[in-house]
Length: 212
Ligand code: HEM
Image 1 (tube, rainbow, N blue to C red):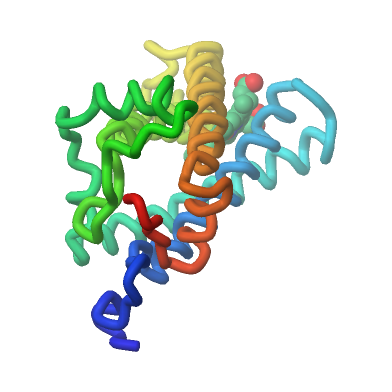
Image 2 (cartoon, protein in one colour):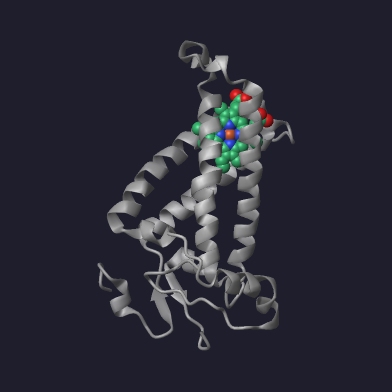
């Protein structure tokens, strides 16, 4: 297989969409976010699983691991030019919304066809942009403020901010992240078979059905 461009060796009906590092960061991020959700809602008091102290320790450890992963991933996105995949477009947004809410259940053809250059459909681009530009800053900003609350007085932060506000913002971010995960997982099942999208993110190869 050509190491630089595996698509040189592609068989008809399949394309190499997700590179090795991309699959690694996707699955490690998924694991870390699920860990943050499980421990975060335990800290919140929604249920008891590990106990409060171990949950706080695991939550903090996963936060640092996620931060490290993101630092490498941002570097990867910019050095490979893959960041362009997240630029939003208004083209076919309505067609995609109609497909997901109606066409998909009636066997209508998918309005968007993935290519190596454009692997996210327009709705996916908008959803990932919302995650990057809204949910992540909210959860990270409030998480870091929460983590470093001991140094607030030194920095004068406690004069204009209370812990209640930070806790509220962080919990709101956690609910938005949970909603994102639920919708994201549901949409992974809407390929030409139930597991087609998941398989592609495991192997890197996307099967293009005959009628696509
Ligand atoms: C997917 C990401 C995350 C989710 C879903 C999440 C969820 C939560 C939830 C629900 C709580 C309980 C809030 C409360 O009831 O007051 C919490 C607490 C906390 N989170 Fe997160 N969080 C995430 C990411 C982060 C990050 C990135 C950081 C740090 C940079 C962080 C730091 C903290 C801290 C310090 C606490 C309070 C722990 C304590 O009480 O000592 N979280 N998180």
